[in-house]
Structures are given as structure tokens and as C-alpha cells.
Image (cartoon, rainbow, N blue to C red):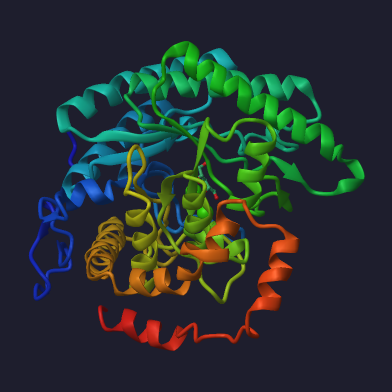
Length: 436
Ligand code: XLS
Ligand code: CA
Ligand code: CA
């Protein structure tokens, strides 16, 4: 069996003072924090598409590297070699999970039936490698955006033939996910949206999208898939306006169509910033509805307005994200999937390790620091005090739904003019800095 990363042994935890770039400084998988192992809090996953299939290409130029696992002329042989390289990478890096699109792991055939056959063959091999290594599938998904047939969308396509094709493709990808014990199934609607309203029946497309998702829910029940269905918001790119714009939009849509209990959200950091929000905001909105499912952990570049999918290295972002995740009770079926790709100039295979190691260490620090902040309780205490007026008197009546405008008027007449008390933003920012 070929070895694809001969220069790397298993990446180990060596502690903060280590100067070894192929060791973890903060991520100590079996260390217990608040009764749970670090690896079980963080549930790291590798994204097959970027890590195994990325080429370094962008819209201005061709790929800048060619991986040794992509050498075979026959596409099925290439898929097999890639799968072996993938599991070698997962085990050497020490992640417990991976994620894929159907077309990442197996090539699309001339006909739908051939595509299904290709996928089934690779799924069988993946199942064996999963059981040999203990690596698990965090989520599967279908690529319903690359093939030209999806130019005008999948579940919102004006042509029912394409709608049907997407359903059939997702049916098969759900079956593959079930077969591999996947813990979630993701819907990212890259082309569910519009380029111009001049040719778009917006109302019908919304209805179609709801029908599409309901069919997925029905099929999930039919085959006994017990994982979580996730929707991944993104405001645009490739589509000018994507229907799953952000957390709030998706939650409103799900509520409107009675689907709120059927789906949770997969929040991607870079998509949050594209929507004009922070990562922390998107996580908070999802968590407030009990809909925080999983996370695509990456980052954009604040000077660039597109989806650069970089490896996350910002400690503050990781701390704020982990605070929301942990306060929402931590991950159940979800995890932290590194939907991140190397910069075009990072051309070596080894750079794949460096990218993941810094990302894992960043979130390990995020976890350690956020747990300390939560445990000390100073921030919570401040927030609780800020809203304490709602615990009694007229405030409690408001929360209990017992107040009305007339009662409010009576309350105002009987009380003194309200004066603002300090929100203490700078004090709190200083408090956070004291932990970092
Ligand atoms: C693209 C998305 C995509 C989803 C899975 O921007 O991040 O990769 O995560 O289809
Ligand atoms: Ca993503
Ligand atoms: Ca992205």
C-alpha cells in the first residue's frame, strides 16, 4: 500500500513550549475539561473537498499543486487512491471525523445510474477504512451545484426535470451517509437563489424549496436515518442572492413551512461575515432557537469580500464561538468541520498538516479559555444583573405576558424617569482579555 505522507508520523500533543511544527501545542485529545475529553467537545472533522481534492486553482489561474494520489489516469482508480490518502491523513492528524460531497469521493458517470454505481463502490471501501481506523463520518452531502444541469438551481429549478434529478441524487447521497453511519446530512443550496428577479418566480421557488426539504424529511424517516438534517446558510456566491441567506432567514423559512423541528443549522464562519455578521452572531441566532447543529470552522479575510475559506487562526473568534457552543450545551451530533483550504502559494502536501494543526490548536485554546470564562461566571453574572429588572414587579409581568399598554402607562406615571446604566463594554472587553 502506497504511503502518501511518509514525512509525517502521528501528530502528537507536545505542549505550549514545543517548537515542533508537526505537534499540537494546545490540543490534547484525551485531556478532560469539565467532565468531557477535549476531542469529544471539539469533534474535529476534515473536509474532503478542500483537503483531498483542492488544486490551488482560482478564477484567475490553474491549480498550483498536483497531489500524488491524483496521478492515476482512471477516475475510479484515482478515487480509490484518494480515499487511501484521506484515511492516512485523518489518522496521522488524529481527527475522529470527516465530511464529503458525493462527487468528492466518487466521480460522476456518464449517466445517473453510473454515478450511483461509482458512489456505491467507494462507499464500500470507505466503510472498511472507517472500521479499520475508527474514523467516522460527521456528515455527507450531495453536490447539487457544480454540474451545468444545476445552473438554475436544484430544488428551486424552473425545470421539474432538474428538481427530480436533485431529489434522486440526494436520495442516493442520504443512503450513502446512512450506510457509513454519518451523524448528520447537510443541505447547502449554493444555487438555490436567483441571479435576476426579471426571470424569477420568487414565491413559487420558495414553495418548491419547502417541498424539496419536506421530501428529504420524509425519506429520512423512510430509511431510518437517525442523524440530524442540517441547512448551511450563505448569503451569496456562487448565486447572486441565495435563499438561505443567514441564520435568521433560514429559521424564518423553516418556521413558515413547519420544518423548524426537522432541521438544525450548520454555521460557517466565512458565510457569517459574507452576510455582514460575525461568526458569534450567527451561532447565537441559531442557538437562541435551539437550532445550533454543527459548524464549518474557517475564516474569511476581512479585506476581501469573498469566500476565501481560510484555516481559522484567530483566538478571539474561537473563544467567542466556543462560548456560544458550550453555553448551548456543546455538540451532540455536530462538530467542527474545517471547511478550509490552503492558500494558492502553499503548495506542499505538508502544508495540509500545518493548516489543520494551527486550526485545531486555535479551537483547543478557544475551548480552554471559554470554559474558564464560563466557569468563573463573571460575564454571566454581569448579563444576569443587566436584565434583573425582568425578574420581579412590572418586568416579570412583561415576561409572563400579563402586562399591557394601559398597565405600562400606569407604571410610568407612578415611577421616576428612567436613566441608562452603563453597558460596560470596555470593562467587559478588558475582562475577556484577562483570560487570553
Ligand atoms: C460552500 C459551502 C459548501 C458546503 C457543503 O461555500 O461551504 O462547501 O459546506 O456543500
Ligand atoms: Ca461550508
Ligand atoms: Ca465557504
